[in-house]
View 1 (cartoon, helix red, strand yellow):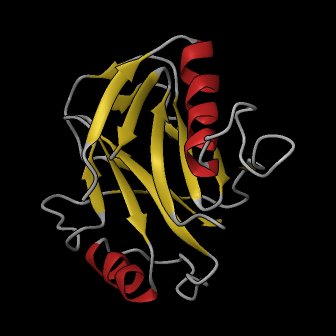
View 2: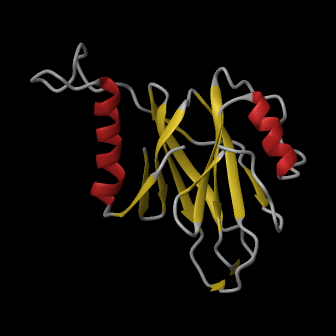
Length: 182
């Protein structure tokens, strides 16, 4: 299981630097030019999910072993890499109306659960902005809706999406907070 590290950062240190470090790590920077065997950095694909599944976790929910990684007291990230785990996740969370036949040989499901309180606006508070991936390694960026929240600790809000080409998450960004998965 991955162990997250939490960092709060500025735009340049938070948005650009991790992507560049991720691309460099994936490419294996060794030579003086900075990129081995290529004229430039490896391709980074940005994915904007067309469909994201939104749901609330029910009281006393239990996730299958190894599918969720706590990032902090408030957030946990989901990574589902195979059909068996996807079926277990759907059953454990009583998910209806989500695609049950995804091609896990070509991608994976990622998501975030957040214990936020109740938004006074009534709007859904979690949104997947985008995912970036290079050679199967990626970063997930989630936005929490701005506004006032009732401090009552209710059941967590969740958002998940299927991402083609993704094999593993390295970075999760929630607004200005960065979590590195090791």
